[in-house]
Amino acid sequence: MLECLDLAYTGNQEHEVELELLREDNEQLVTQYEREKQLRRAADSVFTHNIPRFTLSFTNYMHLFFS
Image (cartoon, rainbow, N blue to C red):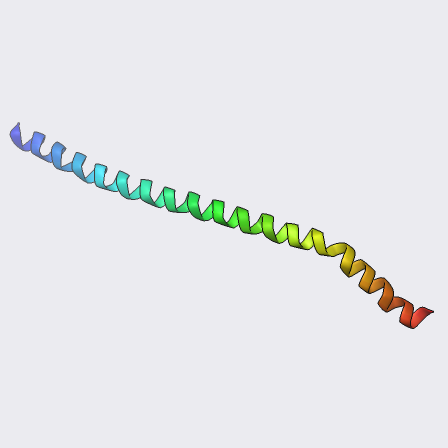
């Protein structure tokens, strides 16, 4: 009987350690996701901000050849 309780207690401790590791992994993944989301937003902002400039430059470039 005591052996069963000891095994159950040991198993419970192992699960608690594993659970803590999984929580830490999850926290790191959420942090990484948020960082990547911010970088994606920043990249999209730069890209959409520069589209008119690129279009204007491309239009001027095309006028050199087709004017």
